[in-house]
Length: 120
Length: 107
Image 1 (cartoon, chains in turn purple, brown):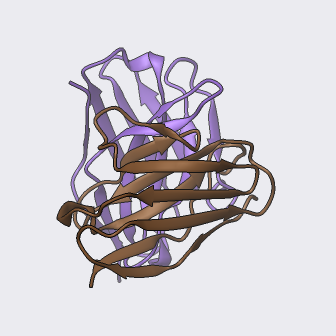
Image 2 (cartoon, helix red, strand yellow; image 1 turned 30 degrees about the vertical axis):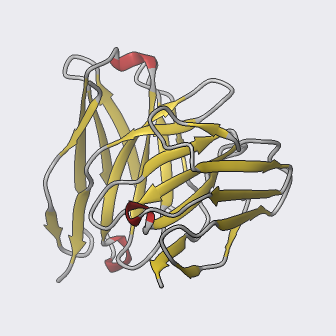
Image 3 (cartoon, each protein chain N blue to C red; image 1 turned 45 degrees about the vertical axis):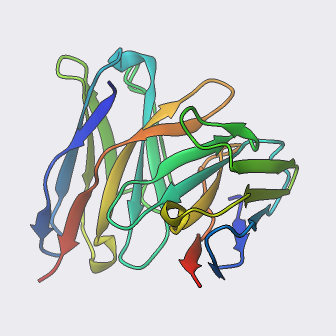
């Protein structure tokens, strides 16, 4: 069965970087893209960007594009999201989601979420 | 960016009720609209994609409709496990924006 297992919670200081991982299993890794979505406490869902494991192509939301890098490791079927220059408003639950692509796009499987807390 | 606006932001209803949540896009998105359910402490779950297609395993009491800028999610007879927050999402353009969510609470 399809599973996305994310790395654990992190606490970082302002200005630091964090790298969250998402390990996929149960299907052919390069067949589907991944999106990263975050949810700040008490807020809704915010799309951060997308990566294709097939060719490494990425698309980022303008809000974070200067601070985020998404990568994949096909040898371990793992996707990574690194966010730099962390601020307090980056405190959130970060999700990876498998993106069923092509003309019709939806997020059919989600990781369990990784809590990132930015605090001095 | 395409803005997605859901209404209402919160809704109180009883088990067995029929409820409808609406989602409006700031520009036409054809039918590229998905609905997700988020229960407390759980990751979002896909319910409906391309406006009206039920994801495998989702109960038939959930249905979606709409095209262009106006969409709706209907739950025909609320069950206890349906009390959650619901989000619409457009995938017509980048960024793939979500609505602000509708919290469905027990009356």
